[in-house]
Image (cartoon, rainbow, N blue to C red; front, side):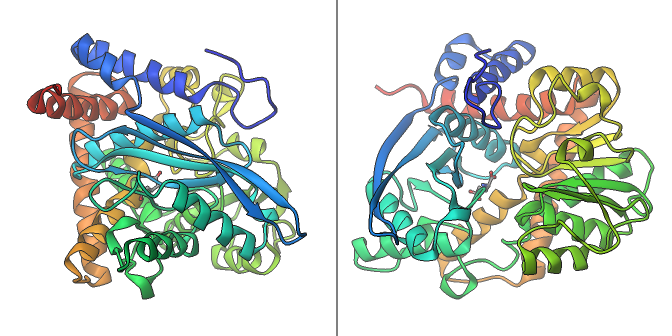
Length: 423
Ligand code: GLU
């Protein structure tokens, strides 16, 4: 594995990790090597430069990417990330994981991802809007409701999706609701989309805990990341009776052994921009949070936070991956040996893309569902995928990750074989 030199959160090359995972899965699930050669590459990767007039009067040029990994099962789907550490290989890995995620959940999409190297926290709203519109225009021939459908990811939100929707629609001459998901409710978004990733993680965790004849109520939980996924997940877990002992964001974390008041924490973050200084808590680092004595650890921020350096010290019994790729493969083996149950990203954080699928369907039909309907259907899909993965995990005596990836890769392989290779 190439060790990345730059001081980013990516210590290993994420695309090499994703390719390596695929090869291991292919071996266990006896996937034809001809297919592996197809699936280990991305179908298309577009790299664009995005010049933007900044508020200070100078032009800054940002680097942007949109990658499609695979479209055997349908149009490609996946978020757009705004983060200073974005690399092409990170976007490729995230695109491949989207292919597996959509296949595992049984929704008719392939996988894609986009990213722009920027620090959205340091940019004004106007700068963000200009950058988003120019990026959209640079990739306008790549995206579309039947082709490739972006969505939010780290550093992007419904406003960014509204600008993508508007820029695309202006160029087509009419509103194209299906071009992007995660839109605000007043321009064709879906009820339940904002909470969807956290809901999916919650439903998945509930199933896993039920399988062990335990209950979420009274369990001690640590949540890393307090954005769209971690913030809502902490709230839902507390509503289910769990004790959220720690939470963190990119600046650091807060701890209270008797439980943090999550609504207070959300309000504090809204007011101050971070969790620091939250009443009745001690501050802890992100690294300390991962190693806390707890029942459930939910890494909901970035990749590669559980590594060979800390996996042997993780004390949680269950890890629920709200983020994409938070555990490196070597750390995964350590957790497995220590009997930690890992609910893998492609299963645990798939709620976002499942409700994105609902939003896309609603947009195409111009017919919108009630929130309970969205959540019920999300629960049905999550629980089906969980049970399929659990059965494979038990029958093959493997890990939940291997089972989830195996089922997904099998499905994509079957679709590829059925379609045949063109020409
Ligand atoms: N960015 C989210 C993910 O990683 C959502 C993708 C989508 O909704 O298309 O799953």
